[in-house]
Length: 405
Image 1: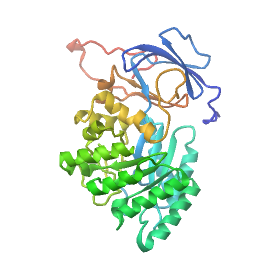
Image 2: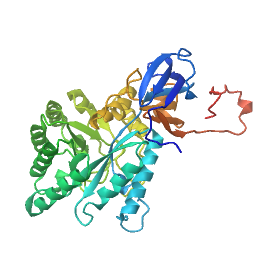
Image 3: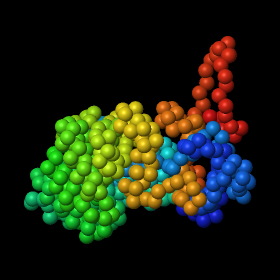
Image 4: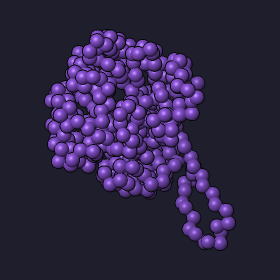
């Protein structure tokens, strides 16, 4: 059996793919990198695998910047979802593979720590991360409930233990703490101590609180992300614009959730999405995530980054190109991952979708081929058939010889 983590000897030729600028090219991958890009037929057959991508659009693979895999797929649970480590590990694995099938090759998931569970949920997620190595890159965000007041010392201690155990990002929900500013300050202090990024849940409906967070976060490396910030939509436009300017000046990124809030914020109002256009105009790096995946917060959540991009574009927050960038390279930047371009030397993190262009892909994209570290790790092939249509004399849809989808 092939070791999924061994990418050193993999050679893969993708031929006849269409790029977002309209060019049709051949792309040769060698291990985890793109080795060459040339005109169709110029690279010749590869010694390894060859895949005909005629009729497919080839793009940088999406990344998921805001997930809650430990509670995913629990919408139909009778009673509270199981917190047993084996159940959490199973849910995380199943949900990650579901998102991988949509095209996601890197994912950041928030995990609550403390309370009665202690670190058991995080340990289960880390076990799943190890099992998924070679298929999808999984980042874990440690989310303590309280960091100030009498319970603050215990919260800080378990947060530090979580990061020593393998948590990748310092997270939390300042809005739920009696002292939101003190909570944020504590998180930023621990992040500076460990040299880790920060990813905080906030409604973003308090301009003074956002201004204080921006002042504290300015200059912190490797970076601060907040979301879903649906409360920005309830602020007066000029107030939201000032907050956006402050976040941009501090280098704070925003992870919007166009599909709906994730449920981590108990006071969040459903249906509110961050003011993406105002944030982008101010220069804030805006990414878009899925949030809830068929859990109690959203029983029909899909976890599909193309849906998040579709919602941004269809609501007029940005163009189709900008919307896809929000779920691909901007999401990768928030995760601290290198940019992907379909050029020699860039990471071989790719998604091929049967579509003629970005607008068509965001409108109706079913057949997908997902490539992680130069290997095909997932295929989804959709076939649609109609009955009694011969009399309509419609033109037949073109398709490649090797893919019936």
